[in-house]
Length: 443
Image 1 (tube, rainbow, N blue to C red):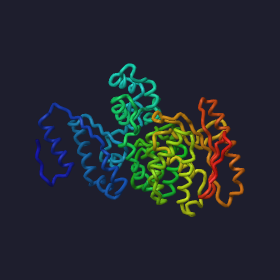
Image 2: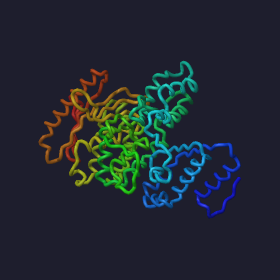
Image 3: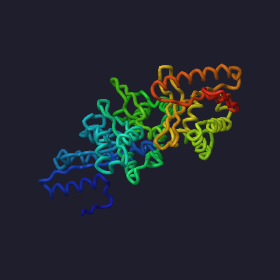
Image 4: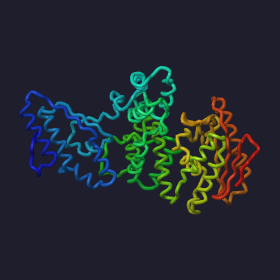
């Protein structure tokens, strides 16, 4: 045990401790491991940049703390130093104070330290919970792949990784009776959607909207990667997208020179983005979602193969929007509302802009393993301003033709779908047509 004077700051405490250890253990070398070294600075970075700059400045206590470590590394007392964290913020902000560390975040040699490979996942299941005849390992892994796989932290890595926290949480629940938990996404992960808000907060509303709308519509974003944060320069989209990557909210799909194509790694993270969008949408538009109506609408889909309750609920949301909200309204906004309602319920995998030879299908809904229904749904959405109502029949015919072509293309891929063409007019009317039935719902 060591006792120090109260007025000593953390750097002085560390210096005194290391001096004492060095004098008593002359033939020993120290290995210093700092876990989550950036945790507190990430909070300050999001909410109080001024205080952040103060504590990592030349006279700041954080900078002094790492200068002490550097000093004792030079003297030979510390043989190895290893710090784990999320973002290259703290140490990069005081390079001259601690310029002996190497950032290995993007180094392919260390890539597999950040998660489970599929081989490791299979071995984990086989050597812990597997009981012959109780479940099919291949089926379980296939399902887990959609929910938890996809992380790639180096453009040179060949294999994507499973999120270890999500995997362990799922398997702990699954091992009880070999049935899937009702919540496939760990609440500790999905409830952290406000982290996205913190990262985007320093941007202008236009820049923030560009990132979110692009990611939600395409599941991807192309941008450079910031590897060293300089707080004397403006915080831009590049820094924000990079922080989304470092926090595991985007991952590397590919890279050409310095330009990275980032994608959402898995369906759990995709739900996080939609939870954030839902939160922001309800605040901005002063709306309240009725969870009971949403659940009943989804139950109608998998029990009866119909979507009229869902479409009616979307229509009710439109009616509560102001005329100002509708000034720049388009099909994209309609699709965003549908996805906001559908994507957090664990009943369907929701795919936007599914690509095929005929174009891009608006919404493809495929039942998850938790869904007792068997129907896939394919929705083609149109939106007309009230002043353009005269083109309703033309747009409806166009939507029916498009969804029919998409259906045929998906059928060739082995995916059979119930198809609907839905046209909204202003905020009070819509037509919903089952493209392979004679009936049309008009409201």
